[in-house]
Image 1 (cartoon, rainbow over the protein chains, first blue to last red):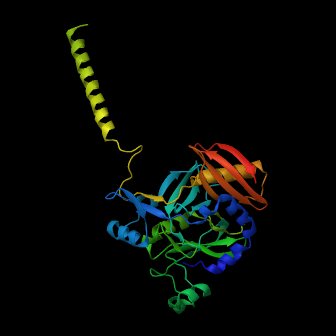
Image 2 (tube, each protein chain N blue to C red):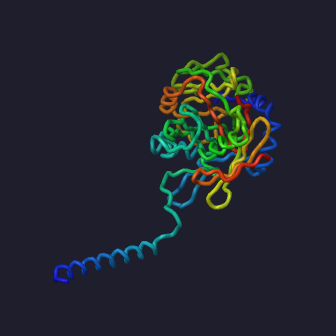
Length: 227
Length: 112
């Protein structure tokens, strides 16, 4: 919710090397992957649209099982405490000892707002204030009333907790945060931020330290300069 | 062989035949190669390498190419053959392609 196209300007600084890899990968990979859900009536996989997601959430009171918090096997050389975000599958992994990880369901950037890179948690905040960036106000005049900052609370789009992602000592403008729209987990819907439901973001927040490495994977997305 | 043993053998043979029949019936009802998804199952619209395999490729590439800044990033991946994936990686000074199988064994790393 807080990310903005302005952030893409920073991304573009690293684009020359990214372009080479994307050409190598093929143009077909440039499209963001989306979630599909199985419909047992038609025995078909169908698009998990915002409308379908809201319907599922209203009916079940939670997101699909795969997007609920769970411990999974995870073979990695990354040290415990590292956050790995797989935007294509809508999962965030927090690396644990013994080749395990805690997996959370996430919502990620919509088309044109996805990104990939290696950053770190620079700051943490409980019930953060949300300040729409100028680019967002330009796109959505409704957000102008919060130009001075929307106080933290249940209606705040950042939800219960936020972890601010930094490149070196500079705020990337992207965050891992909660949400006041829990049905959006599993969707490509944000302006580049990574959102979890409020219970999950509070759990993650309690386990993550400032300085933790964050690796963001997203097929075909623009690359953010690594730290 | 006494009467008890013969009776037990008859029962065992009957059980085995019943089991075989059940297997055959079950076999007739099988419509796909794997278990059907259940209601509410989700998946991604595209197939990428499992997240941990992408990262294993990144760490092995850093090791192999002696990249010490820790900035090897998987940027795309796709199935390669039946049981392996191709992972495309970028780093400060270039790109590389890594092939890794489902067991996590890196088959090749090539700088491009």
